[in-house]
Image 1 (cartoon, rainbow, N blue to C red):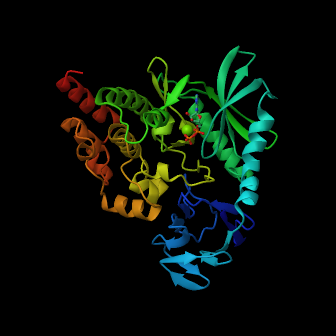
Image 2: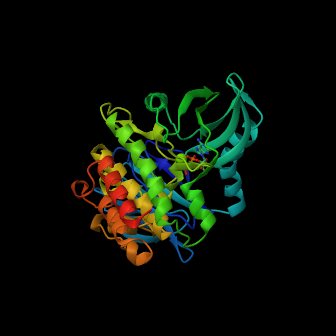
Image 3: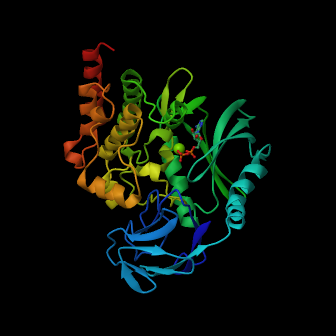
Length: 395
Ligand SMILES: Nc1ncnc2c1ncn2[C@@H]1O[C@H](COP(=O)(O)OP(=O)(O)O)[C@@H](O)[C@H]1O
Ligand SMILES: [Mg+2]
């Protein structure tokens, strides 16, 4: 088991696990997948990944470089004890006995999971764990005053570092709680329990598109009819949110929940950022999940401020791509994904799965254009095209 220890810089003392099967990126981007606060870092600065049992560090075209033991590098193997300087921070790479580190990493999750179940948090009785995401754990809970079951997402303690980011999060969630749409998961409340922040939302009895894909196994796909049905519902939700100047920013298969009746709901809109309140800076994720990178448009990777409704069009297009072909549009280490995304290179969905109807493949490709001006400009425009294809196919 390996990890990075921040020896100096704003995140001094922080310990970041490096997993052999997952690449890890460091940078200072203010959404999603990044770990460090250092203002001298590039948004996406460098990557740690294992190849054939050895760990490597790679610079991701950062503006002020990545130094390994004081030598500027582009890609280099690393060993335990090596020091990597990025921006104003120094991190040490440490490899140690698997069991000990695993133990330490599990503490967080265990602490949260075990101590919360069957506990009462305010009005809520926590019943069971539903799942674990990148920023927290989702539980099923019973709200006695309303006599209803709810979903409760409890954030990992290290996700929100300071009072200011907590306040920003609470404001963001408050904006989300005003949204009322049949295809959006309702946010009921937010709260704080000891040091833990949580958000209470509508419980969707079903599973996510990501789970649907998992159940189908490797190269399992979702057919055109179902994909269009889910996409249309998602687009109606997006149209509604966009009209209120709210961009989802985090649309991906695990954030589309489908209940037993087939109604799709977008989750995690609390992560969204109201376009006219640029101060709602989002929380920093504790772990970069490569799976998510395929769903983030290039402009959002480069500069979170450039995000607008067309970024959601991209994310939905990429989600449809995965549904139809059984694999995300981009894969491999982060450096490779970034290169391909910059070049706008992904395999034509019709070539990956020949049963994808021509016109539907065309919609996905248009939604996923690298330049926002070449995509559908609104969710409504994309919805109209899907309806046309549905009609033409007689679905
Ligand atoms: N409102 C909800 N109702 C039911 N299940 C939910 C709800 N929100 C999230 N989940 C489930 O909880 C798990 C973790 O969700 P989350 O923390 O948002 O992970 P991710 O970062 O992958 O989206 C997922 O499996 C998701 O399907
Ligand atoms: Mg989610």
